[in-house]
Length: 306
Image (cartoon, rainbow, N blue to C red; front, side, top):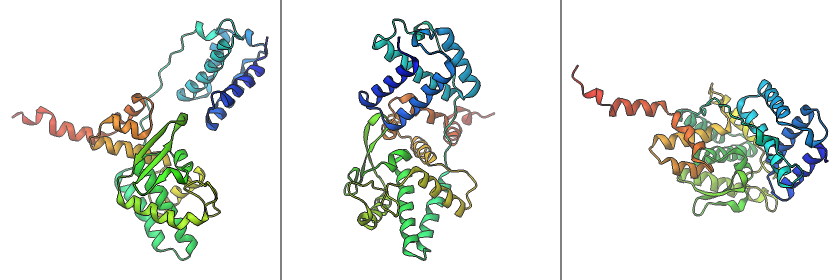
C-alpha cells in the first residue's frame, strides 16, 4: 500500500499536469495536505479512518476560522476522492462521515463613495504637484490602477496579471482571466477612466518588455500585488483617510454601489466573475442605506394618520 506522502505527491502532480490548476490553488493544496500529513500520524494511506479524520477536523476547528477549516477539509476530501477514483483505496473514509458546520456571515467591507473620491483626487493632486518626471509617471500609473480597480471591480490578482493584449482601449473593454481560468469581458463605462488608461499606456509602452503585463513598475517588470497595496496605503495616508483600505474593498464597493443603483444581481454576478449567485448574494446584506430608504419611502406606515 502506498504511503500517505507518496499519495499526496502523486495527487499534486495530477493537479498540476492533468487538471492544470493555477499556481495559487496548487500552493494552497500543498500547504493543506502537508499540515494534514504532519498531524495525522500515520504512514500507510489505508490506516486512515473516519475516526482519525474526525480528530483532525476537531484539531482544525481549534486552530483556524470556519472558512479556513472548510477549505482545508475540502483539500483533504479532494485527495481521498482522487485515491478512490484511482482505486488506490477500496473505501473512502469520507463516505462514512457527515460534515456540516455553519460559517458566520462576514459582511464585505466597503469604502464610502466620498472616500473613494477623496482617494482618487489625492492621486491626481500628487501627479500635478510632482517635482520629477519619475514622480509624475508613478502617480499616473497609480491613478490608472486605482481607477481600474474601482471601475471594474476586478480582483487585484486579475489586475496584476493583465496582459497588454487583454486591454482594448479603442472600445473600452478588458478581458479578465478569473479564478479557475474563467474568462469574462467587462466594459469600462467612464470616459475619464479610459482617458487615464490611455495616458498611462502611451507613457509606459516603451518601458514594457516583450509580451509584458499591462501594469508594470519602473523597471518594466510586472506590477506586484504588494506594490499595489503599498500604493493604496500611501495615498490613504496622504489623504488623511482613517479607514484601512485594501484592494479588495474597491471590488466590494463596486458591487454594492451597483446594487444600490438597482442593477440586477445577475449582471453583478457576471461582472464580478462569480460562478455561483450565492457568492454574489452576500452584497444584498450590505446596504443599510438602501434598506433605510426603501422602508422610509415604500412602507405603508407613512400613510397612517395616527
